[in-house]
Each structure stands twice: as structure tokens, then as C-alpha cells.
Length: 317
Image (cartoon, rainbow, N blue to C red; front, side):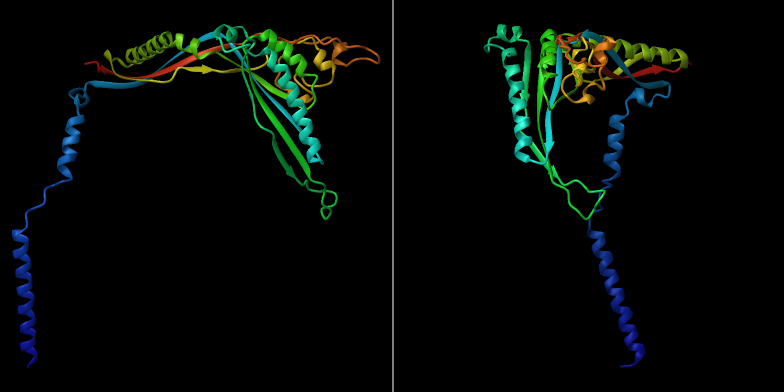
């Protein structure tokens, strides 16, 4: 077969295949413009007359409200910890002190589960963690080739909530005489019932603040007919206040330890009235120091709420 005849047959084959492909495409239904139609429908559904109106000005503001109230609970976190080369000794020191603290707390708990007993009890709640133990080998800077003895750490933490602040002062005085105890701070809070009772007032004041902000902006920008179109409420929250707010006799300082224990660092964040110079210097030889109860004054706690409001306004013509 000559070369020209082979070429003609190839061309004829390609032409038949192309014609068949065109025929199949002609019988297939045309696919709908699935992308454009739903998108157009969505845009039209979300485009309100106000949103498409060029004369409408939109602004989003956050209104805030705060209401102060004296604290109703004092939260203290007591840490009992020790470290040393003997694991059993370290653990026993912590457990012994923890049992002593439990003995101080039990008389302050409600006598029974009745509502009257709970209200009368100085303690609202207390709990403690189980014994936590860790260990490490310190690095020997003087002689890196010689390994030092392993150090063991043990700790127990207490979460204690007082409703009676006089009892808190007495408890703090007794706690200050114990070894291996440290309290870094006191958190002052409100009860959930109090927070709930002020929610309505918080909502109103936060919304009024948002409305006033919107009016202020529109007055400057020359917009009129300010109207809310959407509101989102934040959670009412108890802004916890941290601090001591205490008046101390100075007896704890005279013993050479921290306010609530033997760790000097426990006084770092304390704000207390000045103790007499002789007492701050520590007891003299043979002098007996009379421990006086610490006195705590409840700090002011703020209840707060935010609301975010969307407004529409008309541009000045």
C-alpha cells in the first residue's frame, strides 16, 4: 500500500471519530449554571433595602456596665510543700502539716447540711489535692563530673472559701505559725446569687451606654434617625479582685515568717499597715510575742457586662 493511501485512511478515521464526538455532545443535556444561580439567590436574599440604600450608615458599638459591690467571699489557696534528700521525710512533713490545716478547718464547716447551718458557718467551701511528689538531680556547677544527691519535692494544695472574714483573720494567724505553708494572695468575689440579682441592671446600663455612644458618633458625623438593628449580649461576669486589704498587728512579721506561713515571699503582694519598728525588727532576747489575730477588710468587687449593638442611621442630605 502506498504512503499516500495510508495517509488518506488516517485522515478519514480521525474525521469519523470527530463527527461521532460532535453527535454525542449534541444529545447530552446542557449543564445548568450551578455556580452562578445559587450565589445570585444568596446575595439577593441577604440584601435588604436598607443595606442597598447608599444613604444608610451602619455602626457597631460595644456598651459596657460595671456595678461595684463589697466582696462576699474570700478565696485563698494554701500551698503546703517541702523538699529534701529523703523522700519519706519530705512526704511526712507535708502530710503532717496538711492534717493540721484540716484540723483547723473542720470546726469552721457547717454542722449539718441544712441551709441555716451553711449560712452560719464561717467556711463556704474547702477542698485539698492529693499528695504530689517530684524529684530531680541538681547540676553540680563546682564539679560537673560528680553527681549530687537527688532532691525530692512534695506538696498538697488547699482551696478555701471564707464567708466570715473575722474567722479568716483567726485562721490566718494560726496558719502563720505552721512550717512549710505559703499563701500568695487572697481573691475577693461575689456569690452567683448576687451576680444574678444585678443582671437586669447590668443589661440596662450596658445598653444605655451603647445607645449613647451611637448617638455621640452620629452627632459628630451628621447622621440622623439612629436605630438599633441587632444586639449581642456578653456574659455577666464577676471581676475578681486580688489583694490582701488587711490590717495586721505585726506579730506574724515579728516571728520572722510570711504572713500566712514560714515563707518570706508570702508577704510580697501584701498591702498592710505599718507595724511598730520594734516589732518589725523581731523579738528581743527573752521577749514573749503575743500573737494577735489578723484583720481583713473585704475589698470592692465589680460586676460587669458588655453588649454589642449594631445601629443604622441616615446620612445627612
